[in-house]
Length: 504
Ligand code: BES
Ligand code: MN
Ligand code: ZN
Image (cartoon, rainbow, N blue to C red; front, side, top):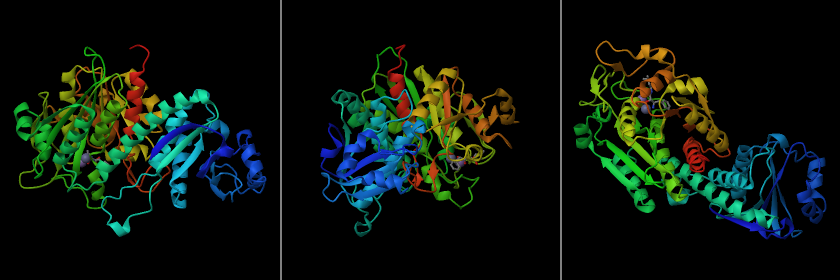
């Protein structure tokens, strides 16, 4: 979808659909829409008084103008109570609108910049949220559908309208951020939607190579031999049962000063998690094609940083492997020598994410980073604890955690902190090695986080467990059914904020 910005007048715009927002606690037509209502002989007012349009969240009413206006149709979108209209409400309203518009067959629409109830949101933030909503609401994965099954066409153009010429510049900046961050999510969703027979670790290398070429990033790929030589026991252990060679992928975006320490993002990239010898039950196992979401999001976020030319140094690390059973597979009881010298007794081969991440994190510390953030579909316990609406967060640095909390609120991809207390380390004790890879009953998300913490040295670090938000069973305004890629925009927003922090 192309997104444009324009100064103009609602009553004069020629378009297939004009999108207008309405709040629950406005009982008349808002001032900005009075002229439109007059042209329509008071239809908007009538929809209000009859109770057909109440302004409730994401309610929509579509009317035809029959030539009363240059706009062919008007789509009224409910935004809920005025005071509660957040950026995320705006984003989701646009997501719902974009699905409704596509149903009409329209190929373009016009929408004035909506108003939020919050005091501190700028017109550029609103423009960003509107663009994100419109793009994400329209997301579909159709690559494996044969021609005759292809769904209706997509919306081609969106136009954001303002009456104030002095807002155009800010709106354009917001639109650009919105396009980049939404396409980060779309890319991550695509990568996760591809089945595991296609999206193998080697195919991810290819994807990374294309992005590295397009965005002028430095790419380093360590294959199995190299991993063995370096002593990445997590990588080589987890991938032993698979025919697919493991790939350790490192992308480097140098947008900041040479001397500036980088941020390092590490994403769990298990292209299929069968559980290995500790085989998973077959029900829903197909969802484990998305056990590479963390890596997909890291790849997308690094691309976004480059596309926005953010003045920061960012390194993305994707430890990519497939977790399969087999005659050569890693067994429960095996002991692995990890990159940082720690030995780990594998008590459950299904706790594989933390094993590849351990090597990823240990590698990350070599960059002397300003911060490390890892993203991973790590534990079923995260789903039990948080349900679908919060990302689990654990970390050793209050400022980094606060920055992720803020970015999460802005992106509508919120995090919730769990305690990273060393009391839990007790549960990871092994009789034969430095640690075991499972923590036993209770606190599964926490013990996984504590396990990871042993590989970051004294670097500022945050771990995000996205198992909770990873997969949606239903279609939502901005979240597609299946892989959601929730976390991608969180990372992008975090990088945007970090790049403009005052102390740099
Ligand atoms: N990838 C899974 C976690 C997961 C489960 C993500 C469901 C999304 C949906 C992870 O590798 C795993 O299997 N974790 C185990 C760890 C356990 C063996 C300690 C789990 O949570 O059951
Ligand atoms: Mn697993
Ligand atoms: Zn897994």
